[in-house]
Length: 114
Length: 112
Image 1: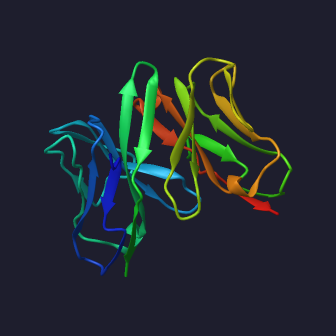
Image 2: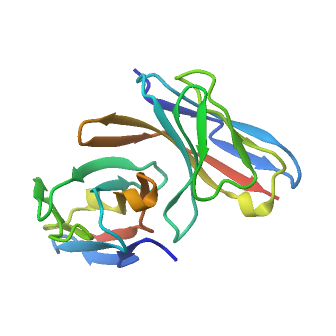
Image 3: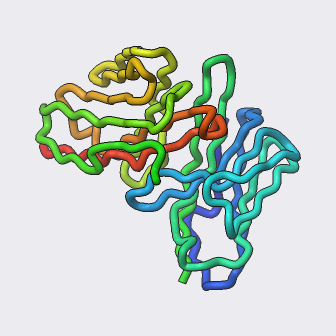
């Protein structure tokens, strides 16, 4: 049981390049999310999904796309990287139940855009 | 502006001293959660509080949810070097679209 896995761990991009951050979970959770973490700003929600085929925008969605073709995978795509997207990106999988909402975070991807 | 405010931003304590971080929401919360992130690591779920006035303990950690369900606190008694990291609160509310909104976090450093 690996939990939530993310690849790559580190990435350097040039302005204008595109890339996909991978996220996978093996806990059969329907709900998954992408966050970015910047100093002094906590974790901000980029996009989330409540199940395969269903995605929605979070607080800071501009410049990012997501898709959810399977329960396990939830990739995040940067369309045209900008220096403002330099951040640490965390994928989270949520265990939802009666009065329960526990988020399990992946190890993160540290992205630098030059 | 930030919907979930967390203070202090940073705290440096001597090992054995107590530590408290506070979280305040601009709206009534259905629940509040606390996470710990070690340096270079990822956030790890600590606890969830749901009821007004709820108090929960985990060894040296005490978590409280305010009577109005708009504020919460995490208190660590007799800090140890293993307590270092960033502590985040995260609140859920219908006014937030039933999504978690994270505070900015409190960074705790412990001097031995």
